[in-house]
Amino acid sequence: DADVTQTPRNRITKTGKRIMLECSQTKGHDRMYWYRQDPGLGLRLIYYSFDVKDINKGEISDGYSVSRQAQAKFSLSLESAIPNQTALYFCATSDQLPGQGRTGELFFGEGSRLTVL
Amino acid sequence: GENVEQHPSTLSVQEGDSAVIKCTYSDSASNYFPWYKQELGKRPQLIIDIRSNVGEKKDQRIAVTLNKTAKHFSLHITETQPEDSAVYFCAASPNDYKLSFGAGTTVTVRA
Image (cartoon, rainbow over all chains, first blue to last red; front, side, top):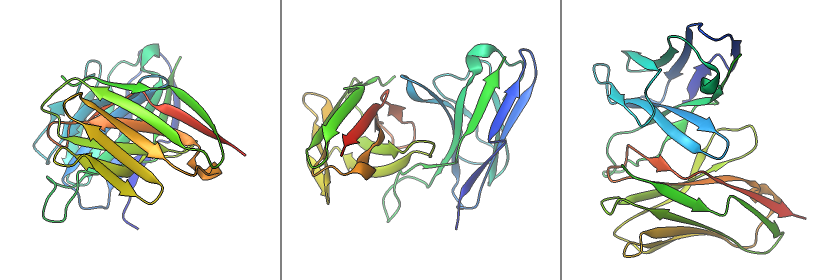
């Protein structure tokens, strides 16, 4: 089945370390996203990309960077991790603009739980 | 930007009863309103969505209503079942791709 895969699924690291979360998809979607989930705050958009050469900031991009290496791969980096970046991170994909049989539905990966000590 | 508020944060219902979750949004340009369900330890998944050109949409036991004048929309689950226990997120967007999510509602269906 076409899917969205995240690695690693769990990671514990220390303050100041560089961390990369990777996402790959076999859905053939152009649009990819990184969200952060915190209890009581819902899902917040960090970065999104519409194609390989397109990178856009979301609502909470400070402290994060991304790379769209290929249509199917979108990685999230924390250059110097801090404890308040402890969260569950989700990668997601979507098709192009809805209409003509396409929807705006987001397809999420299984999540990457990051703990920064 | 868009601000979405969701209430209640937790909801406990008896199996077979109805559950209602309400959301308000701030950006009058928003025209796409999806609802996602996240079961414990799982990824969020779309369960229903509505666009601003309709006031209500139904899919079996779930329905969503939209009041654009008041800028609020609601999820209704009828005849609740244990498998409806999950966290539900509403979202709003003026352009389909930059969703702003509510904080989530944890629904517990008591047997």
